[in-house]
Image (tube, rainbow over all chains, first blue to last red; front, side, top):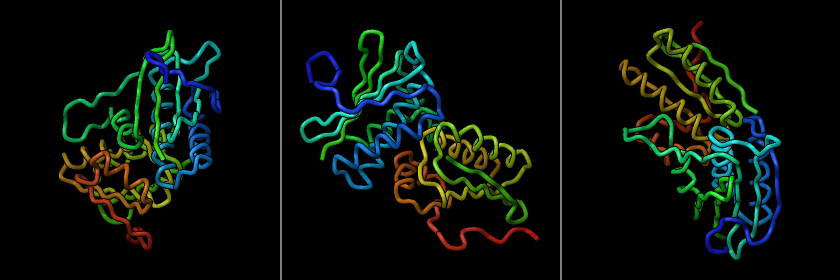
Length: 136
Length: 114
């Protein structure tokens, strides 16, 4: 990955979705299919699918879609890892949990970190990019 | 795609069935269903997720909220779920430390009140 950017070195498979919760199923199906083609088993696929769902949900809820009302997901094979990039054009809310025994909201980023090997979050110009990667 | 239904299963005990993919689009309806049950003053709620294939952090938050409110009224909250992946997300959230999570897949519910 080039220093200072989260943009993938090459473009893999892309999916553009309307920034609406009804599109989340399609995002999960995309993530699951890409993970399946990469050779991941059921548990790894679920973890990646869950993490992508959280990132896209966050983009829909807290971010801002592109001018045409979409968010973008890209799947890229990077060495021995499969990476997903989720773009939106707002400010990602990391949903930092407030200190309490069992928070009712605000665990999205913690979930992503628990279920994939790498989570990166960065501003790219006017966009926010989340990168989620899981190794073989 | 998700579905929700609920019914009384014993005096002062109500079951909420939530199946399918429980994501951000399901969370408001799941929350409203549980709110409606709790507004009846019921102190025992069973969330039957036997048919759930996916749950995200927003729906887990709804379950945490239900647990918190029932705990405050000295009630009980039980989750029925056998799906290994869904149960793992409960563990990551720490929900398994606070709520009884039952993996019964046969006869998970008491018979409805006649």
